[in-house]
Length: 200
Image (cartoon, rainbow, N blue to C red):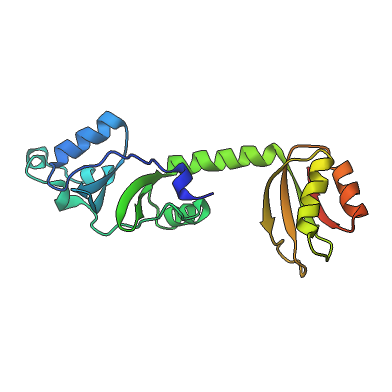
């Protein structure tokens, strides 16, 4: 799964010359903790609730702008970044959100809440699916044949991954809608395909 699928695609933004007070008000109004800083259409920085909360003297808030407290070169991801990679980045740097840039232009925001929702979705998919790890018969058209055999035996292929860790042979990991695997396995074996592992 890629970041582009789960990011907030039309994030609330703030201008660099806005006051800290205005930025705080935006965060409160929209119940958010991160704001991309945009000048025209150009992404110029990133500001968080923590950054703003460090401005303790209320009398000074109106005089301080977002430009004074923003991070001008924050960590970023792209829409094509893997969700797992983004999660590692945010965990390693202990940050709660990142701007999503495409060719230097802001296209979204990714937060810990977005990642959690994605992982819960993927966990639900895993719980409602079955997996078959196969070494396909060594002949032309073996992959297409395996897909057809699975379908004919009552299975529906959700996705297919290449490679099983620790295996010397070329393997395919088939993720199927939850189903009875016995007739599928029987049919595959009869046609010369090797079943390495199954998770039902």
